Image 1 (cartoon, rainbow, N blue to C red):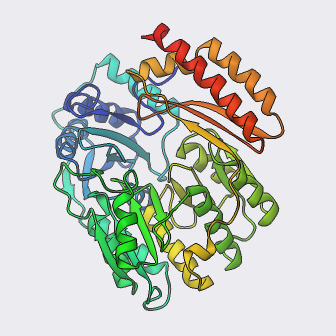
Image 2 (spheres, rainbow, N blue to C red; image 1 turned 90 degrees about the vertical axis):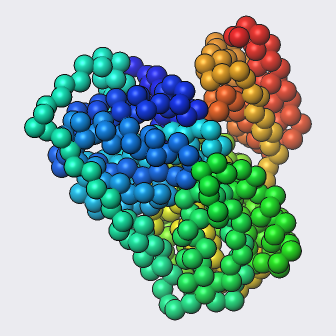
Image 3 (tube, rainbow, N blue to C red; image 1 turned 90 degrees about the horizontal axis):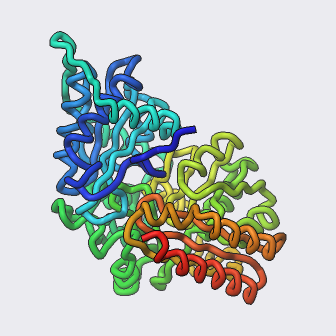
Length: 453
């Protein structure tokens, strides 16, 4: 089967104004999508995050769709989870989210979202790439799409968020620090928490096109941790630029790992009667302690998937999972959203804290982490990363390492889908063996570095 050339685990991504994140490519991608995907309603929606290059790509995508007779709805600045949630009720063939998620403003990306709110299969994006490479698009003078703004999208998402907490002022008495990474949630997350009764202190809520994710948000949590200590907050929340990733801290300004948050959400939803015995899903990069907690303490089924939010969501759909996520901060609650949704996760977490009536430091950790080594060697390019990660020599070493860990741990080599990194992850109950295996893998990667320049 053919593989994607430009589409990674989360769409097409790179430096803005450098191929493939150019206006020319975006227009051709829209034209390809118009031919391959927009065959029912002949309508598509476009949303974007706050980075400077978003409007340029929005204009190019709009031109491509309209030139092929597809009507375009401009949703404006909107979080990715809002797009995935609203797409199924918008009577459109697809939506496009323009974002580079947690990356700096110089980068941007194009995510394609199917009519049901989920990501397209690789087979579809391979076909789109083939159409772009062929470049044989025809124009018809009597088939030009309309373009209009849909100002209702953000309000619809706001109402969904407000309705999920039930009674009036359910978060009364909760002091929260919210860091919105100068991204999509800047104008909505603090407002939602305030309207639900929480006392809110904000960071990173003044986007200017250039400061998205800059020294703030889920990738730079230091400001959040410090602010929580300074103002005596009960909870700190940091999200990324497009709002599908979350990091939280307790009232002491201590970061809570994502696996612990996944465990808490499952426990709370089980205790309040919403989970109803449904399984928990995470990736092979999640600490093995999470799996044991879910299986042994919660008495729930647990599934492990390849790295990537898409794989987690696919498994949750297949097995009926209600809580899932990655150690990176993508956490999915299928009763509330179709993708990682920082706002919905934050609200359920806040509800859970009120439910138990305890401080976060009294609730976490729910389980002990098993010994883990997680290294991310950086390389010159993603092509170099793919060559090294897929080399027969490294795969042979990895196979032998896995045999040593069989029954007591896991070893994973994963090429990052968004950065030129090889992720080396080893976890298990034998700390000495974990370190020995990680050193073997890392030394092999370094030997291969020069070979694949």
